[in-house]
Amino acid sequence: MLLFYEPSTRTRHSFELACKALGADSVSLAAASSAVAKGESLADTVRTARALGADAVVLRHPASGAARCAAALNLLPVINAGDGTHAHPTQALLDLFTVRQRRGGLEGLRLTIVGDILHSRVARSSALAFARTGARVTLCGPPTVLPPAAGTALGAHVCHDLATALRGAEAVMALRIQQERQDGGLLPSAAEYRARWGLDAARLAAECPTAILLHPGPVNRGVELAPDLLDLPQSAVEAQVRAGVAVRMAVLYLLLGGEAA
Ligand code: CP
Image (tube, protein in one colour):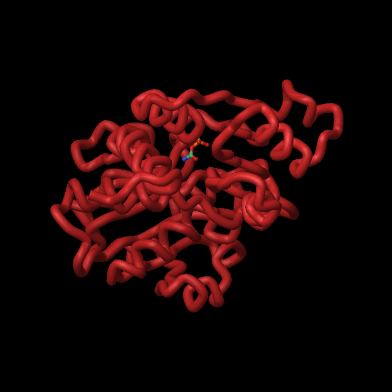
């Protein structure tokens, strides 16, 4: 059962398509139109999913740690489809897959992640995953949303100047500016953000002309990315979405008892 307490296009529908491709039935529960809106707790919703015959739960939730709490009930396997600002593990897997397909491997990769690192579960999961493969990961963004400790925690370098962070990068990931998670004006205005940390063709051409361009979506065109960047051949943003189905098929298959080839 797919339990989505936050909006989603890519993750939810790629899990649905992955289930279909594997011959599994999937049922989606959108929190806003379910008994969650009447106050049902996460634990009771997971219990209800099990009573309805679900073999596993795919959970997206605004609270960091929600997937761990649901898994700790020991009722059903729980796959984290994004929890608060904590983690988005299947996004990290599809990012690795996309770059490996485009580049032919991950060894020695230089990846730069640009944006609001503090609030980004994608940055957290992907930085850790790429660093584990031996990649050199650089985090870049406004100092208010890129604490120095983030580098140590995620095995990454921290750089606040965009040109320096982009220099020589082989893959560049822009993050969505998440207005819904801003709590107290940590970000500059959209105009200042665009001027100092927005990606455009001239910046990429000057510092990393062949870099693979990644974005987890949805994109705020004209803020973190210039509107035309997604049309460049180096953009892998649609490839990321396509990879999401195959990667989530693999996750479902392996976590629910399939064997690795
Ligand atoms: N990348 C991502 O999680 O997108 P959705 O919010 O559309 O699922």
